[in-house]
Image: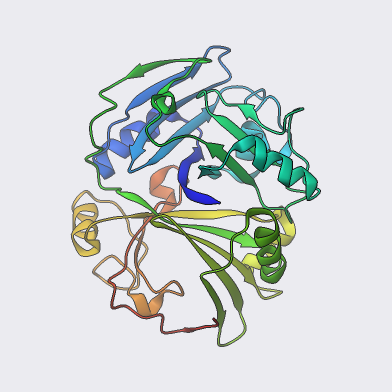
Length: 318
């Protein structure tokens, strides 16, 4: 059912500071600067491949007016600090049919029809996380050629050339990483509700984590259950399941690391090259982690994975 990552939304404390940071560090200028007409939020939008990257600053507790807790942007920022709030998965199925199926399976959806029109003019569906094992699932129906992807009937915007290709450092969503309570339960939920079977089931040899992976277009959807008592397990116990981070694909990891270091960007890596080797990562990728303290609290990560790279510290259960 999931076809691509339609949007990634980061909640931040100051939009304009992040716009300057994105330009300086990644060489990316916003495609659009948007303000809610009710003055409850403002954001910057970037086109990254087929995904809309949104840098959103809540200006009022009413940002996310319909939602409470998980879905309210202001509450999320206050409780968790800056970070990824929502990933919306693009679907090509008829959203009304999807809503009927999900409700028939016992899921609670917002509104009488089970979906609503977003401020972008797209049809969007939000599943109550109480019914989805605590995971925030948002689905968006949009034909890929639909120009309304960039329309904002409930907001005003200062738009640049939206047809141009984004020339910055970030190229696409490489993977989305969720922290969950129970891998096998979420596998059953996703198959029952979305008709998706895992591409990979992974387990750490020391029993510290179990993971499921789904291929969604060019992106990996990864959901991981950590062993009781570990740092991430304690985080799930305290805050519930969440999107821990999004990793953006880049063309060349070594060149990217050199460019970032030349700009004075602090990188969290166990070596002088500025990136983690595949054998150091449970995901089998070469990764760059920017120190969140340098990025106004945002955990920016980038990755590149040669086709020949094997996952060395996990076994694949297929």
